[in-house]
Image (cartoon, rainbow, N blue to C red; front, side, top):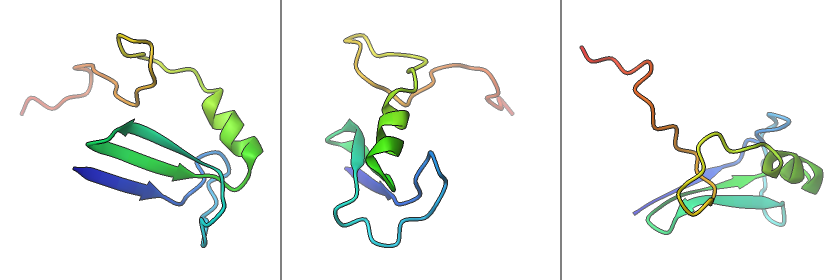
Length: 74
């Protein structure tokens, strides 16, 4: 099981020194997930409004980009 924390707001690109009480989103499943913290609820909403390029079969959210483009076969 891998759980990762991201304390850099992906919208403002500012580091969050103390994520306590900050808005966040958990992406992934219970075996492999990432918690992303935001400076504000507005930034969280902007992040959630970004369309998902490859939705999963159940139309859930996915950060996966299953493509062979730019894979080094070396």
